[in-house]
Amino acid sequence: MITSSIELRRAPDNDLWLEVDSAIPFRISAECAGDMGPSGEPAAHRDRVLKQSGFDPACVLGVRQTHSTILCDLRSGPPESESDEADGMIFDISRFAAGVTVADCMPILLTVAGSAIAALLHSGWKGTGIVVNAVDELRSITGASASSISAILGPCICGRCYAVPAERAEQFRRRFGEDAGWRDGEGESYIDLRAANMRLLEEAGVVQATVVRNCTVCDPRLGSYRRDGSEFRRMLAVAGPFGE
Ligand SMILES: [Zn+2]
Image (cartoon, rainbow, N blue to C red):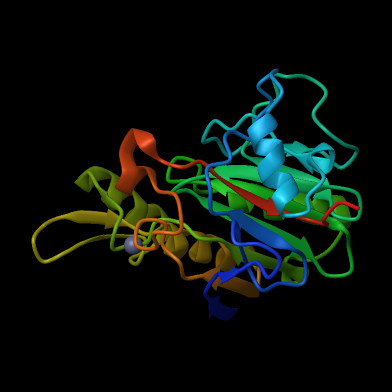
């Protein structure tokens, strides 16, 4: 696996967004942006936050996130019904951007060499494994091999900050490897979303990954449910082209 580890950088055009240095724009809002899912109400604030970054809100796809491992195929556009619940979207990057709401969970972008079809995922502890479904789906849609898929693992809560009940850490260790669930010298248990997803990508045959080092708890510019409790900022992670 060819892995590069990078830091988020400030978007050059405004202070309110951070970005990954990548071929396809992949940005994280540093202010509270609200929910990306279809709420049935006009999401004026969210749309304003998207516009700050040059995204056309009408061209940013979203789904109702439920911490699942379910993907929605949105290649032909926005979900038809309000009930579309999913935590990942397959989309056409030549026509749309896609956005997920995140706080400590990890946004993941998968792209396929030579194709405009991509996947954007919301992957927290409950939904860990969605990345495997996305790799399978991209392979079957594009006919590409796993080795032509590249992954960007966005900012999330780091393994040193993510204390969990001992059983959950043990479950992670068993399913996703030694580095994914562990215990410190004081008997406190932790899980590491990056380690778990890297292991899954490797098993799926993906050979290129970029890991964003910023931790949502350690980096005050980012929103964290763990750090801030009910007052936490819901950030948007958006990938895809800017609007006109
Ligand atoms: Zn941390």
